[in-house]
Length: 88
Image (cartoon, rainbow, N blue to C red; front, side, top):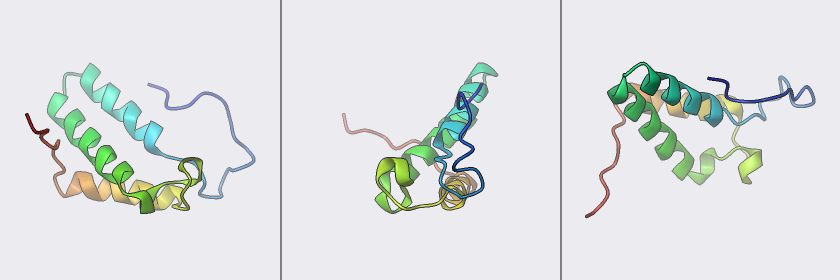
């Protein structure tokens, strides 16, 4: 469950990396382990955070830092983020 391939030494330590791939890898790991409810909660947190343009990192045209996005995803998980139901 590797979120990235390769290195980006030019941005290391600058808070520019988008951490969403790491969280998505966690979702895949949890699904693999049969922890579908936990996987759904993490995915819901990812979806809520990425829907907020103020939390987009530079690769998505925003200015949020790695730490800001990470904190937002963790806060969503801690608050009990649940998958949003789509209208039928």
